[in-house]
Length: 146
Image (cartoon, rainbow, N blue to C red):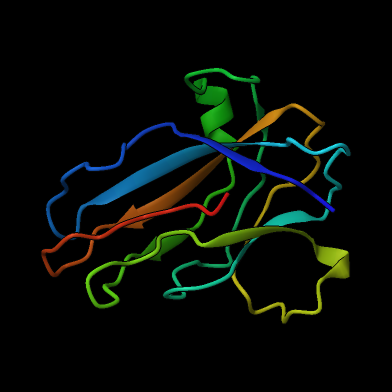
């Protein structure tokens, strides 16, 4: 079984106020806190809330372990996808995700996912997502499941 731990929001911290329809890049960092290297097929899979991912995704690269920021090179190679946050009653889950080995997954290829690839034990990986704030003003909550 693969293990992952959410480390931090690299930019756009919780509580950031954005004007409606503002486009922004959201980056967060996760760590391989398990006992095996993640295989090439490792991906984050959408698991709940609104379907917000676009399947046009690109390659990720491991971040420097425990670094507080990403270099321009690391940011350019983070996986990216474009989706729009939509309200679901009073809140919206930005990324309810599960880390899985795709070859053991029985889900459809249509389920949104971000390819992560191999990450060594103890290493961190940066994940970048292009977002757009909702057009309707309100409070929207994002979360990454640990």
